[in-house]
Length: 364
Length: 232
Image (cartoon, rainbow over all chains, first blue to last red; front, side):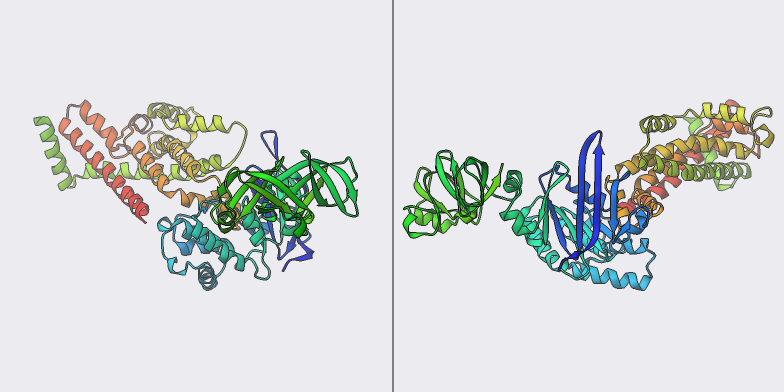
């Protein structure tokens, strides 16, 4: 479990520029011992740049990095620091030799003894389920096998911190699922701190103790998965973490922790503190919205029941996204069984309902 | 046709009888060009790798310079090495002109940019993040350079072949700085030119065949290593 009082790595005022453009600008970032910290954000958010900076892989680093309280570059040389951490890149970047030699490479850099190398390499190949490939040339590996070997290579050096840069991208779904499942156990081992960049929020939710949201080189919010998913700091984060319904409105009434907000002429009830006349943005996750054919206003604790018309029904595999026009657009996730039972189709009149507590209020 | 036939026959006789003069010339050619290739590998791979991995202002200018050097005319190299080693030249006091060492120097100058250019291209073909991955695994800067050179070993074998091929077959520099002295600085190319000049075409053809066979054998061995690596 993460020890939030024990900071293993701290970055201060780190900044990177590329041809005059600022690609990374982070005032402060603390990584706790034994935690899994996910960095999420869209493409070009600066996730890879941040990981490379934290791993001391940039040519002219700016800002300060403290590892276990020691300044990297002064109290601790860059090579000494890099021998305490490691990084797995988006590409597997295996060396053109055997699987064994790849996994042994980090240990050879550290002049580890032959017997120890053999023991650690077999242990890590076993851990990632690729022990049977030990003598094989990396040229003959499949994408999933190559990814497992590259993970084994990095874990073999027993790093204090491992930086993972979108390690599951470009894998087919079954391979992706099997590697994520294995890694979710491995990352929970004591003494393992992980900083993990991804643009897949479900991966982040599944693996992380904390999530850090980035965009345009800046950190927008850091918090537990629950904080990020249910209390996003702004509408960009809300949208990125999956609050598909984001509605700007004006508070018409505020009373005892419940506010009434006018959104496109309709009243929406939400939990929060705001004064009448204040501009707010309401964020609602699609899985929090229920659809019914008849109004359930009198038979439910849900404070928001809005009549509307279905404008779109899209299959997302295991469930459907149903878009409803209630004077503004709402998105709801509905199971195939419910779609069939309610006869949901374009033009169907429905009632969308959600609790006031399902609405996250952002003040403008 | 008779001339060619006679030349081939003469070559076979010279080879079978292990003609002492031909053997001396062949061995000297191998020694001089082999040494020059080894020297050019040390210098060319080091500088080529450094230029490929380092970021510095004017890098493009340096890369263009190296690429231009790959086509350095041997006669021009021969001329400048001669001037440098001339009695009154900057290195005249060494007394190296018209010695095998002078040929080695000139051939090294010819082969080094070839090796350097191929090394540079080979290193730049590696994935950009490979260097970062090696460092991320805890390598020192020196260890990371060694790993990258190892990763580029197949194209680097091409550098060896191109370097050796370039110098074993050149004549301009060898004749200028070596002087084609019998039993001392006479190599296969200079001997071929001399024999052709004297009208001894059969001997010239014989020497050419030996030169071709030599170049083929060396390249066959290197190609065999390269292809075995590729299959691995």
